[in-house]
Amino acid sequence: MKFLELTVHTSSEASELVADAMWEFTPHGVTVCDSSDIVALQKNSTVFWDYMDDTLAPSPNADVLVKCYFSLDETDKISALMREIGCRKELAAGAVFFGSLEETKREIEGDDWIDVWKKHFRPIRLGKIVVVPEWIAYDKKAGEETVLLDSNMAFGTGEHETTAMCVALLQKYLHSGDEVLDIGCGSGILGIAAAKLGAKKCYLTDLDPIAVESAKHNSERNGVADKVSVTEADLVGDTCVRCNLALANITAEVLALLASGIGNNLKEDGTLILSGIIRERLDFVKETYARAGFAVTEECGRGEWYALALKKESAV
Image (cartoon, rainbow, N blue to C red; front, side, top):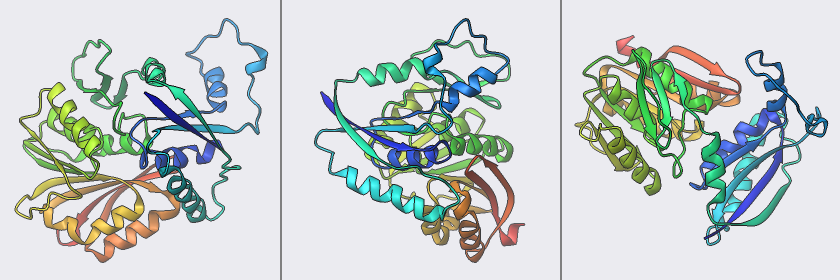
């Protein structure tokens, strides 16, 4: 099977924003090629270099290449993707340098890029949770809970700042026996982590059928399918489902759309965790949820991204 590889030339500071937009348009994978990563490795005292070719020395003004992949019958999505990247540039209002946003395309053969990607995906420690690719053997240590992922088909490996912050907040606010709702579940990492950490029941929803398939597969692979329900929907659609903890790691605009209804699925003293918010949209999200009756109890940020923990005003 052939794929079309789209490469967008951008900057280090905008690369995550571009990559995040790409994940909204393709399930086939996104890669970021940033020469500043070489600089970071050179400065890392735990990494030792025998030799590095001088031609690999990064230029301070070098483009960052963000790549994604489409099957040949999906290439009509590229125009919409580039418009979305343009919208994110406008929302940043000059606070983030996006570079040229030049695009190049080429056809590639088969799934060779997946094999390359697998070589670079390694276990990721997020507090008590260790996210492990299912094709890697990992010996769990005392106090750890592993989440095995086959993430070829859906976003959510724990590498992205937004997912990492969600997992950190999840560990802080989850109590044994809680019921959990994850809206826009992707690979299922958050719901599976919650089940591993003691949640009684986890309701996972996503509008993407590939994400639903992936989350179901990963739930079974982790032995928590009896605790995890995965539905193709934007919300559970059932107000009888009331959870102690709700999570949504999406974009600011979609989070705003959920604000008026998400409280229907949250118990009176429940906690809501939101992530996927760029700095320029943080106040917008806070104000939207304040109007919906929520108060921020915690705010955290990594790079350009922010996450919030909130409670209903009456419960604060």
